[in-house]
Every structure is written in C-alpha cells, then in structure tokens.
Length: 484
Image (cartoon, rainbow, N blue to C red; front, side, top):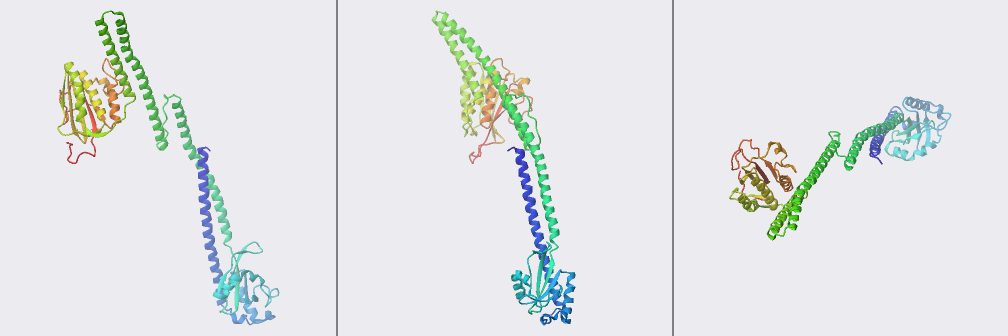
C-alpha cells in the first residue's frame, strides 16, 4: 500500500472514530438529560394534579354506573384540565380497575379493567410503595414515543396515571442526523486534507528517491534540491552533503590514482635503468653500486605505497591517557640524525611536568615526525614546543624556511596539495586524518597574525608554524598538571 493511501486511511479512520464516538457520547448525554427532564415533568404534573382537588377517598367511593353523578363529573373535569399538559389522564384503584378517565365514559365506564397496566407492573409496585414512578419509553399506535407517570393519591388505594409524549426525541433525531452528516463531512474533509498532506510529503520523498537512484547510478553532478525547512528539508540537505562527499571522494580517488601512477612511474623508471645497467656491467663494484641504487628506489617506492595506504585506510586509534612528552621525544630522536646530516638543528622545549592527554601514542609520534620532516625539508632550524592552553595540550612545530605560499594556505591539508616539487602531497592530509580519528586537530598559524602569549620560539614572521591540539581528560590527577 502506498504512503498516500496509508495517510488517507489513517486520517479518515481517525476522524470517523473521533466524530462517531464523540457524537454518540453527546447524543447519549443529551438523550439521558432530556429523558430525566421528562420524568421530572411527568412526576411534577401528576403530583400537581393530585394536590388540586383530587382526593383518593372521594374517587374510591365511585361505583359502577356512577358516570352521571356529580362526583364523577367533577373529578373528570379536574382531570380534563390536565390535557393542556398531558395526552391522557386516568384514576384507578388497586387491582387496576378504572375510576375516572379523560376518555369517553361510554367507552371506559367505572370498574373497567385496565389491562394495559399489566405491562408496567414494576413501575406500579414502585408507585404503590414510594408514591410515584414513571414507565420506560414506548411507541404508541401513532408511531410516536410516550411515557406514563404514576402518582398515588393521599396514600390511599387510588392512583393517578398521566400519559405524556416524548417530544424531545424529534430534536434528538435531528441532532443524530446532523451528527451522521457531520461525521461523513468530517471523513470527506479528512480524506481531502490527508490527500493534500500525503501529496505534500510523498512528492518530495519521490524526488529524493529519484535523487538517491541518480546517485546510486553514478550521476553525481546534479545537486539534490533542498525541499523545505522541516525534516524533509534536513533529509534533502543531508543527501546533498552525501552527494558532495561522494563527489569529493571520487575526485580524491581519481587524483590519488593519477598521483599513484605518477609517483610510481619515476621509481620504476629508475629501477629499470639501474637493473639494466647492472646486468650489462661486468665490474663487481659498479654492479654493487647499481644494486644499491635499485634498493633505494625500492625503498622509495615502498614509502610512497605506505603513504597512500595510510591516507586511504588509516589505523583506528587506541586512545589512552598518557604523557605526550614520550612520543614527542621518540619523534625527535628519529629525526635528529637526518637533520644533522642535512646541516640543520632541532630545538626542543617541553614542559617539566607531565603533558597528559587522551590520545594514541603511535598517532602522536607519527604526526609530530611528519611535521618535523616537513619542517626539516623547508628550513635549517626547527623548533618543537609544547604547553597547556585552555584545557588543551598544544604542540607547535616551527621552521625558519620560506613558509607556505599564500595560494595553497587554505588548501594545505587537502590531499595532493603541495608547494614542493617532489612528493605526493599526502603528508599533511594524513596528519589531519590521523588527528580527526583520534579527537585532535591541527591548524596552520597565520604568519601575519599578531603574536600571542604562547608565541613559539624562532624568528617572527618567517617560516611555517603548525599547531596540534589534544584535549585534556577528566581523569587527570587531582593535584593537576595543567597550567593556563
């Protein structure tokens, strides 16, 4: 079943249940209230009639054949006055025999058995016991609904019965028809609104579905239209971000494949050249030198492949609370020999107290080593400094080289972006990827920015400075090692 039909069925069903249940309850309450009011009116009319001249001991004196007596006619005249309020009125004794009636005396003389009273025996028993009662609704020969009210006269053996039409049922019938029509109208309106609502939701979903199929089929260039400002709008924006991410990843993959081919082609060319020369020469020393060159090219090729693997599939970090100074010193030890060989120098300034943070020690070591290698290639002097600032451990790597060109500053952490003649341009991209997976971050300090309190050593306004930030931990010792 389609989503549109589900919306229509649910809303129509809900509106029908709501209107029918509410209408039925309203009808039941109104019917009960009006019936109670009719009962009170019956009892009140019967009681008033019994209190104005109708005496039980007088009417009980009537015998068969007394229809023409003054006693009969006077009591019948009193009953006749009630016809302005009721449809019938009868006086009868226990045993349900007639005394006086508003009907014709010829048709209903004194002593006539009132067989119709047998249908109301429970109500009559109540009236004889407590003095008054009313019957349930019943349908008369004319198709209308009526009720009888009974009133005992003066605790005697005489009972007054009055018949009153339940005229409140006609408005109730109209009310019921109105409720039925209202329920039908509400269902139609709910169906219309449900259709509009479903269309308003389904159509954007259909467009988003087509966009998803388009992305799945590789047609990524067409953007996903932002639908609205609600949940569908957030979904469309999320899909657009997904499409943009796929496009960027595809572009990175394409660039990486092209760069892989370019970077591997040079070592492979050297390998072929040196291997061919080694095969052709008969001099053992020259062959050894050529094979040494072959090994260097293999090492360079292996390093390139490792860089690409590190960028494409970084190892998940194993976060632990540790002193960052240990991996920093290891990185410096690995870099110092190469730096001195190239005529450079590394200046290290680490705090005396532990630099505790939650990070992967191997990631910290690799990040700092990569930054030190870049700095050593850019300048002759490198400064490694660390300190606490605003609850973060800060590691600064600065050099005295020419700095980062303005054209690539904003894109320096993107893959395959470099200002060097050699290299794949993956070093800083790998650093950023490692830090992101471990909860850290890296920034390139603007050389034109005014110096701050924690200015790293080295010449001001020269070279490049990269700062790495690691969050501190709630598990730090109680005595504290953090300084502002």
